[in-house]
Length: 592
Image (cartoon, rainbow, N blue to C red):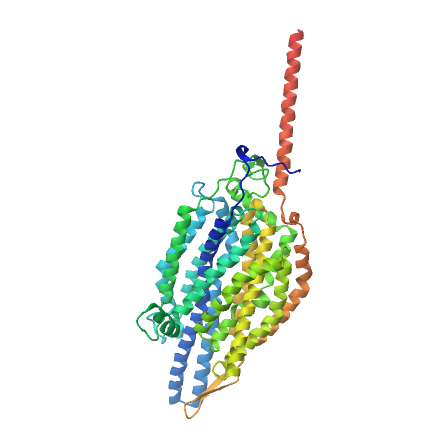
């Protein structure tokens, strides 16, 4: 089909598209999306800290009781306490890792978000505004509940191990992630229609930068303001507040409440001041649904998104099923579902292990604003210039470093934290801080490179006719590929770690020997798995990167348009035949 010349509306030329305000809006919406992610990232540190406090209290009580008994009882009591705390910490982390699953399951309700909406309020705002408002209300009203479930606030560290339950916190953040996943469906689809075709590839940059800003504000902001030492020596003097030693400037509950109020304010502004464009009228096109015909928006503009509300849920799911049958999409699914397994330890366990070895929350909070946030903003911009037009080349370059060099740096950092953190000589401190900074910077750079490459590739390949649902389908596969390995590695570390055997000497000093830390052998094994993955999938990644856009399209609309053309031609021929017959009849009558 030859492209038709675009006819300006009402004789006027289409004005140039200025996306500056749309970029600002997308940044704000993706920033809101990053807030729950940052809050949930801080919870594992609190769990680890709480479990360490509880296990120390339990071990001390067991040791005191064992002093009355025999040395064998002392050894058994200490070992049992260590084993219980180790297993509990990683079991709790494995359970909490389930809270992010809604981002991996959002495809189930994405077509509903695309097809059911209020035309008066706006296709995307109909879901975006309620989802953000409910998330904000949940954070404001449920903030105290989270503290109680974690035993924070007024709760003491003498809480028995059996009474510590992370399931309530997991349910709270699961609901929060569900609402943010719904918001993500709306924002991803809105970005494809909000931005002009020229600026559409820059949408993933807004995604990356916005999520990093939201993550930084909630994760680093909370850890810094909640840390008692930082609050006492930095924040309270800055704000002129009364000294309160041993107490953070904000609690978890109050910080969650503040973030919820911020979310409600931004949501109100979007609901009041931002309007959506109304799609133009469309011609009828036949489909295989029960209605027989659908309206295809902007028949002559192939870059416009198909209106899911007019084709119906059944047709929307049919189109997504057709996308899943494409060979290119199937290979992409396999890549997305497997590539995160070799890197799961670095992604999910590394900093928890560092906290277990004694790394403080304030140190973690210090690293993010100095390293993670600047890299999260700068890397996508620089990468867009270095690998312009080749996102999967950028992806694989980063992945090779991620499975080879990054694990070595991570293990060096953990060994430095465990052995050098309490040493104050210059050489030890230099080694400690250099390995910590390099490890953090490498992980932030590599993750940003791969995430940006992934989103850029998605945006350049999706069929705009079903852009929102198509984008959600690919993002769902990507999120699922990062979610399932998290719980697996948490379980493996907890199950394979053997605590040391500890005894109390006559002087009351505890001495430990033996034991096995599962992190280091698991990291070596996963690195080998990563190298095997590169060997098996490198050629396939290169192949799908070179596929034309046509390989990612279902061509259902082309078939529908062809059917429409045949149908119209048939009707025209039928009308012509009738007119000719009428003309013959009139001629015969005149002859008589």
